[in-house]
Length: 503
Image 1 (tube, rainbow, N blue to C red):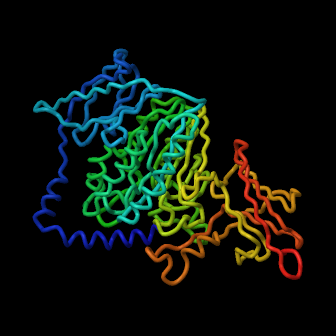
Image 2: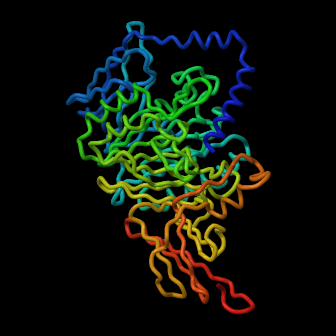
């Protein structure tokens, strides 16, 4: 759970502090003083060798656009680590040797505080009606056993999905908590990206920071070395995509927060985006979620939502906005502040302790497709080759609702229709109720459970559906229809009793 994980992080930080001598700590404090001398950066953006006009180039605070010949000039304030380009829709995504997206250059000025940084892009190959991407949230590997499961399950499943899609996904994106407080394992993650064969963008998660860092700015040093900037933008067809860092590290722990630099940069970035367009924002900590309401708490913890989310909503107000998130290890689809918020289940489920997340959603990942300005999505169960969108439970499985069958439809939200059939006869829509998933409750609640990480607990969710079958019911079928008419079906045969048919 996020709060419990904060405690574990604090324990790890205390232990780490004992390992650093005083001189090293003093050196780290001295390194906090930033260089504030401006740097003049010049360069050109080209596509297939020709200058590309009106392409945004930024240092993460200031934003300029290339001229008719693709030439730009940017004055950076000297505190920014990278200069990066907003990759246009018609370009292929450049890759580092590791396979991760290479849309940036380190700012390394010469003696005159000037540098050249050009971006030579290649045309994208197109195929199929739309452009797709895969979104992986919270792989969160911490040790060899976690890595074994990740490479044995998630990576092969992603490979199969990438092969089977109508056209290869343009990219993948890992939505934070790439690792579990073990930044040296970034190298193992990069190995998985190479095996997947498509470029990957990254989002910073709260478990991806350097735990010995004294400030938010210095906490991202390891992340920067591997993946570049922590906030940036790029184009996907008609959709403008933005990655933000919602983790504010204050030396001992973190809160969900967007810094002033990010908000200022985002305002400048979006100033170049026409009002009314679709904007997809990728973050780790959600702007908002309803977990506290599910437990009748008056307010949400500052570690599981953005404390200044209204500032983000204000900037997104002119657009059709989606915010795609991880962090919670459960699925939740909601609206807040005018934005559609997608909280995706974790690739690691309940921290690699069982086949499902804490809400009963399977450990897995999502596939998104951009069709013009529209986004479509599907959450895939990485524990099975089948495209399962729900799980059925017989009457009595959920003790709070005796005599009723239950269906966990993990990606359900607005626009979904959940119908049930009894002995071949349609009985209508199922009733949505707040409940725990019985599989998650059985796996994760109890003394010593789960064995590897006993602090894991199940959570109540709003994607459970219920219906009461008749006494003579023998077969139950549930159909879940998503907003685009795709139907997922599960069948449940009720066992007969010695005295007659199942109840």
